[in-house]
Image (cartoon, rainbow, N blue to C red; front, side, top):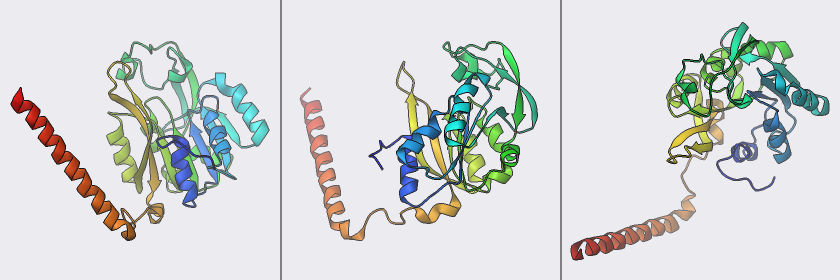
Length: 258
């Protein structure tokens, strides 16, 4: 496996791979052209898995059809929600930013993304998706749904019980509710990936937390370091404190002479 950059999807999945985690099915919700699965396939982090790409925007169907022809698996042009039926997809300034959120939602307040026309699309729950394609667990689930991730998760009560890992796009204000929902369903935070910052002032705006089923808690290191390294770690901490004390002396001396 190639060296992967920490903080990326591939690095997080690479850590799980090296710890022996394998997925039977990888479901990518809001997949656009289906790049995520192909990239992880190239990195070698999801060997032997079945690809399931899902997006509500029909413009991506040619890409998804080609992927299915080349590597198998499934795709669906549908919105994943908390109910089956039909929903209205609100188009945006770019196809990547289309959302099921209504035009009055704060999601549309950014100048870069303005709501456009609406399109009626099929809605499926995650549980219905699993049933439609007879998908096999354990699952890796990735969600990039422009603000409706929580609704999609609510429609997957059965499949979440057989899901080992979840990668979920979230804005700052959405993270607490998503974390609370998944914690209540036996998931714990494993990693933070793809951190994005506001171009104007570099403040945090969105990221992709990775959640791991508590069934896999045994793969996490139980000690912060190897006991054989204790002496070296303590020496490094003493050196760090000495450096801090030297810095305090320097700053105070500068302030006194000002």
